[in-house]
Image (cartoon, rainbow, N blue to C red; front, side, top):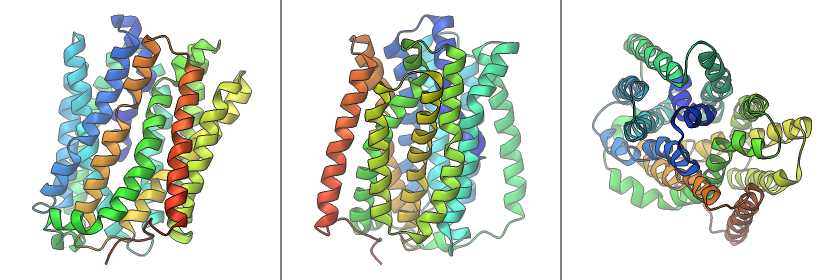
Length: 378
């Protein structure tokens, strides 16, 4: 399920140039297209948190599969820019519902080692990101940009049916039944929720703008489109071991120092990127950047889900997800608007890196002063 859910979020990155060629869309429009996928992932997270105080995690996951199937089919059949933007938004909503329900369920299925389980779940998610450029390339060889989306819609329908059959044969924990007061959970757990949002929200906004325009950026420094898609694939591929190893490290290391270390490493990668040229140096930096940024996702999920009590878990996690995704979503739109305004990519990356330096400095000061929570409130 998560393979297809995440594929729907990342598939527009390698599709941006084919869509540009087919439609003549501007950078701002293409940036908005990618942004709407992530905005769609943000919008349903709070409503899903409220919904999970009334329905089971399994039913919410089933609903995400239905939304993905219908949204992807609609997008594949669009013939003008506005319906395409709407379809991308709907595709994104499926992931918002899915992650809000599935991640708490996984931490409840494996309470002794949530980091390991969430890391393995993240590996499956990341395999979709790794496969996305190859899937798009194969689809373009036999059709056009719509071919990818048609295939995704069919696969989503089949996997939703399979998930339903498996769920009916599985004993699901009842920990979520105590999570019935959304507002109380958010009021109680706001320190850890705000810390997670601040750490990951702005960081992933930079990441969103980077990977959606990575192939475009590489084209401005004389890297061919096919080679650019390969480097994007390297960046995503590095996330597979990152999820696997980081989930295990998150079970063992102090949460806040570990997250801040990852943030510092990613900041360095962004600042260093404009100074690197040539395929092989870029391949090395793409691998390091991909490993670092994907390490932070299981770290933050474990920080939250590993310490939130049963009666607050899904509600507080949905508040975090909504806040984080709302900060993350505009990344591609911001980069697209800056590019249309004539700002060079090197300058954009410098501004991004400067923003992350400021964020890191604030978080380090708060941590040194003991004002960042290490765990959730009991």
